[in-house]
Length: 193
Image 1: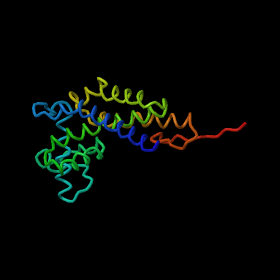
Image 2: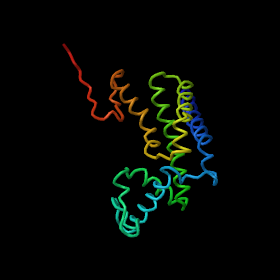
Image 3: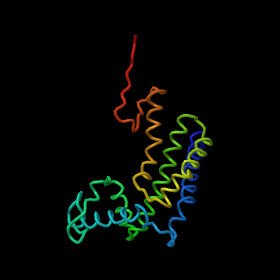
Image 4: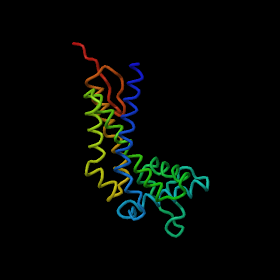
């Protein structure tokens, strides 16, 4: 019975975070919301160019040969490919790069809420506090500025990993578990005088 209650509480947490993430991110899906300004156009163009290169059997294109009147452009040298391939996977469903870009940013928003929940829950062991911290993190003004104005996809994706890094540091220094997550290079040293 206790396990069923815990599963229901976890399901409620998941549903609340998804609902809040959708409430914050769904206005982006309106057709009058333009994602071409700032960095948005280049991320959409990177996804389009990378998809074109993949169709030509070039799996990791550093230079997208179809850009710049056939001379090529090296956008993929400056940005990591993971976000681009995620947009392309979503494109396979929606068949529209703009919608795929918007859906990917909403997914990133929701995942950042889950990451903050995990970090806060590890510290507080309180579901309500963790849900509140997650909601505040998803609705943080800089987060929303990146979502609706700047279209800085690299920063937006990094909001998922920032709480996980702090969770790794917390686990490294305050727990005996070996869950360091993304605290790469951190090594626990057991010093015994």
